[in-house]
Image (tube, rainbow, N blue to C red; front, side):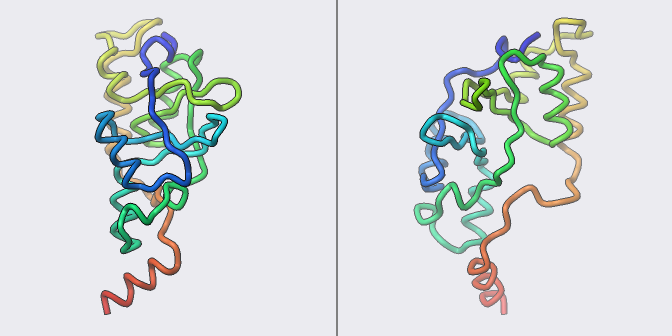
Length: 169
């Protein structure tokens, strides 16, 4: 089974200069937990999650409208293509502990999102050559539940750390 068969194709995105309050609004309106971050030409340069927004607001001690998405995202994007096998995308999700993968064309432009929900809803008992099995999806869920050894988020800037340190003293 190819990613294109189960991915969500109509995906909203934001740009690095978008404030995190607007990104949160997109998540609320689209009932999703992340938004791809794109350049003007549609190339994906990052993903912002609901957790990223919460941590940014909490650690920077600034309101969400004053924090840009570009300040929060990390530059590393793990992705798949529409022609990839779902099982290969599943391995990326397991290895990187990701709930969602952006689906990109050959130029790195956004064509969709593959989420753990898509995998769960399309898993077949026993799997087989064409389908993802329940056990493969469960292995992914298990890997997502394991504690990370390093922080995935971008740490707050020096100013934010000083503000937090001084407010705790």
